[in-house]
Length: 454
Image 1 (cartoon, helix red, strand yellow):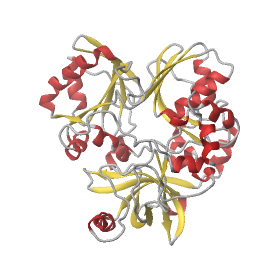
Image 2 (cartoon, helix red, strand yellow):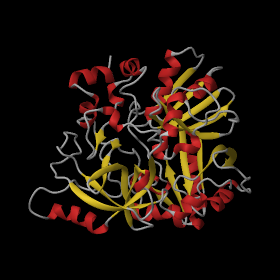
Image 3 (tube, one colour):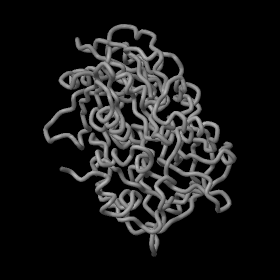
Image 4 (spheres, helix red, strand yellow):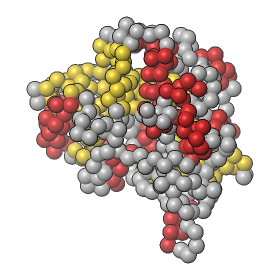
């Protein structure tokens, strides 16, 4: 039997020790890194149209059975009152104490049939609750290609078309007008004689479609899109650019899940394989794992929360709602300070932690200190470069009094002491000045991301 998270924690002494010194290899997206270069590819979803392959890096958890919707309602903070077939939603789950487990995209595929897609954190939690509770449900997991058996293909292909030319390209490749479809609603199309399901989506704040269907049809659909896309300046986007798209839509992909303490977590950690514990990186350090926990409000998930039903953590989440204190923002890092940090690699002495481009995250859970006047006022999550804005930025949760755009803060970059993660070289901490901006940073994304348009 593989080691459980509970056994791994007992072996090393604490959850923080396990996560901070995880020996797991760096997380990668197992698709082509760059088809041209990540800078031009980033610009494609803003200036023309981008084709991104999501088939390999996400996990699908197919949930079916007469109690499937009840399970999702019991574990999700979202309302399910009008959740019909061909609808989707950003599913958010919390633990019994109201702290965030994670989020994923939930597709309502057919009556009593759902697909929960995303990082494994929230998928694992939902499956555990379903298997350990009184639910008549079945689960089928299609792991991402890093966890899949060699030679085994995904169950579904999943492609993303994003950008101002996405609608015109869809009408060309389908040979018909695209019917009006609300944000996060689905429709079906025919491409090269193949029925394709589509989710109206806006991954980077631009118009877009997420296309999916059986794996055997994937290459034909992709080839048809590429052929039709020539006149619309279609750009193939690799994993480097794709991994940074969330910085523009202001989605934090992997906050540390609140699974290491609280009601019911002992049993869960015994069930969960140690390989899915994740890794912790960044300048924020505490021996208390609960100091890393977030509420959904810290990440701007207010719109997802509905108290129209009972769910795990509801009472605690209501208390968090009345005591909320942090706001999600974008931090634009000072160009001179980023330059100075990188320049230490070319100077004598111990350098700063290498800042990778376009994405600088070096753990599954990136948690860096945000300071004002030398005092901690929040944490910085994902960080990276946005070509279209020519800025290096991070997504952050900061105290409300420091969340006003234009506020000056400081991000502490690097670890002290250095952890033993494989991606961490010997380095010293540096402070980088940053300015608070709205999240999303792009005005187009802020104003258009969730409009009810095709």
